[in-house]
Image (cartoon, rainbow, N blue to C red; front, side, top):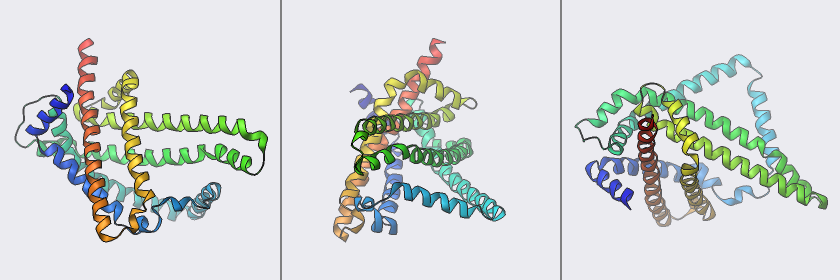
Length: 289
C-alpha cells in the first residue's frame, strides 16, 4: 500500500510518466491491430495443421538460399543493420527523456524544468545501442528457443503416431523443455529490463551492476516479472481467441480501447516497479558496501 501511495505521489508530480506510457502503448496497440498480418493470421487457426519441423526446415532453406550469394547477403545484412540502428536512435530519442524522468522520480529527486530534454542529451545514444543489441539478442534467443523445442515436438509426434512406450519419456522431455524455456526467458527478461535503469543511473559499469542486482535479488524479482509476462501473454491469447483482426469496425474500436487501457496500466506498473526496485536495491547494495 505504501508503494502504491508513493507511485501516485510521484505520478502526480510528474504526470508525463503515465501519459508517455499511455501514448506509446496506444501507438503500438494500434499498429499491432490494424495491419494485414493481424487480419489474416492472428488467430489460433494459424496452428491448425501447422507442421513445426517443416516450418523450421523452411527457415533453414530460406537462410541457405539467402547466403548463396555471400556478397549480396552481407550487403543486405549491413543495410538492415543500419536501418535497425536508425530505428533504435528514434527509440532512444523517444525513451531517453522519459526514463530520465522516471529515474529521478523513483530516487525522489526534486522535479526540475527540462528533465525530458536533459535525458535526450544524455542517454539517446546509450539507449540506441541498448535497443540495438537487445533486438539482436532477442532474435537469437527466439531462434534458440525454437530449435530447443524440436526434441520435445518430435517426441510428441512419435507418441501420437502410436509409440505407446513413449508416454513417460515424452512427458519428462516436454516438462524439462518447458521449464528450461520459462527460466531462460525469465532471466533474459530480468537482465534486459534492469540494465535500463542501470545505464541511466551509472555512466560506466551499469550493465555489470544490473547483473549483480538480478543475481542477488532474483527470487524477489522473478515472480513479478513472471506475472507481467503472463498477463501480457494472456491478453495476446484472448485477442487471438476472438481473432480481433477480423472484428467489425465498432467491435474493433472497443477491443482497441480495452486492450490499450489494460496494457497501459500493466506496462506502467511494471516499468515503475523495475525503476523503483532498482533504486531500492542500489541503496541496499551500495550503502552496505
